[in-house]
Length: 401
Image 1 (cartoon, rainbow, N blue to C red):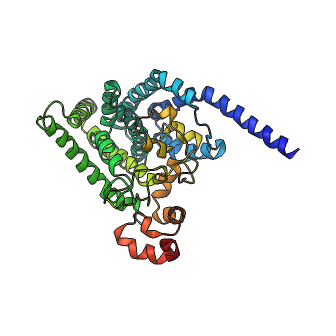
Image 2 (tube, rainbow, N blue to C red):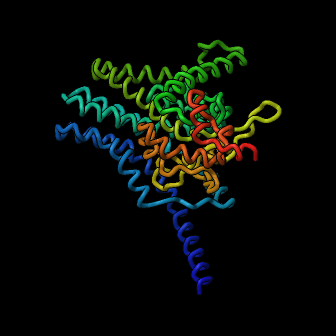
């Protein structure tokens, strides 16, 4: 009887996964919810005169989505090879979702800027608008990330530039593709956080470090092509011009107050990406080989999470190990690696946790130690905390083994 029940359970789970696979493609349109909530909240704030509506998206992002994740649970489904082929061949549908959502990002930014600048609000209500637009930019940069990896599809590359331009993060795609993916989980990568390093200390290293690397990589590319840095071929300048034009037009139409609002929301949007970078590789380290080079990036070098709601919202970015193994693989076919390091919750909840460093360390430091099996020489540690971390966590027998 026990065996029969076990087999029945397996069949039931399999059938459930198959049903989920058939409807999952439509659930990716959850990405539309983000600009839709922002548009609705701006409209309701103006219509009702109540600026509390501006807090809607940040509430959805940091409270409602984690609650939905907890209720709905994980997504165990991985496509078969045949299904992966079918999903890839029908890629146009999945691209159109990103194109429409990109347009929605810009519409939401314009509508909110109008609402904030043309009516009187308290500082608290404006703060809600800033934080909500930051959440909008966080999802927008996730879409830019997905589009920007499709370097052989010029349409997707252009869409990535337009999406990044929404918060003025022109260097993101080039820095991420050519810098982060090369140096990930090493001390050389400004976008890989170190154990003991707070989110805020990481931001002071990551934001300028990533910007410098991105502009330098583009300068090197243009030099190889024997082109000037100010050539029309400079992809970073192309994205920057879109930002300058759009922000300039909104300032001219809505008034001077629009400019500081746009700049502050853009900076906070960049910080949102920094929070995502912080949680993705915290403390994980690729080991050096005898040749002096770092070992190849493996699934064990990224933190993953498989909750349904946030995976749909982030375009499976939480299946981060597979993304680093196959950077150009489309989001709809990214796979879950159950054996890879796992975060206890989805990105929004973990980003909120990271904003409280003691709480983050309480939840994550012991997971890093367990990942390294007690050998702290295998951990990417903040240099300022090496002695402290070794004294507290290092197990000499693990190192000897």
